[in-house]
Length: 135
Length: 139
Image (cartoon, rainbow over all chains, first blue to last red; front, side, top):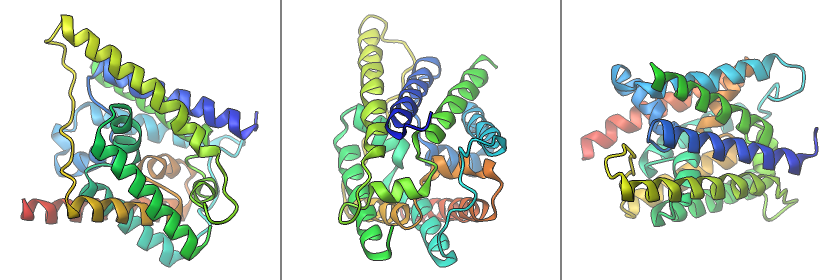
């Protein structure tokens, strides 16, 4: 069960498969930061995006209640890092026009140059943060 | 209504995928980004599996469009790669490396009912909201 490489691959199958399901059933790519933005700025027009977000939250609640340790009890970072990180992730995703789901999954799979570049910058900057502030 | 059900199912499977794969575990994420220390390649297998699957889905969708051009597939316009785009991407990466959570896993992690996951999500949402307001002003 906790062969982590196997879990990573099965997780990847679910992520790629569910994104494909959304593409064929709704016609749209996955883009969580965009959905969250729309849910706040135009909640009446967010339509099926609400369903996708609610589905994610629902399984999160089940994962949190299960005793298999699917979710961590604590993020394990100092509060200033948590606050600064949340500000950067939120604003950064909007300014970059997408986050890990929109750019690194769907955009890269479409071979969009901007998404490939965005992903390289995400990873480079993330590696920089880990180098400076620790893993 | 049918659309809403498919959206819920897709979101649920996507969320399970994030939890199983380790994307909701900040330690795993930071381990993957720790190229100059003890690098943990696990999360490479997540994108390494998910991207090829979605790549095939996109190919099939584009093939279908050739015979049925009216199918409602939405392809988003690529972003212009200007300085704004690079600043946003760098900010996002910094935050991702600082905490080890990106927006999808942050949403799923709310289910753990921990105070710091809730705080991260709330601040991320406020930041998305403010960024949208500011970006609109500069449009």
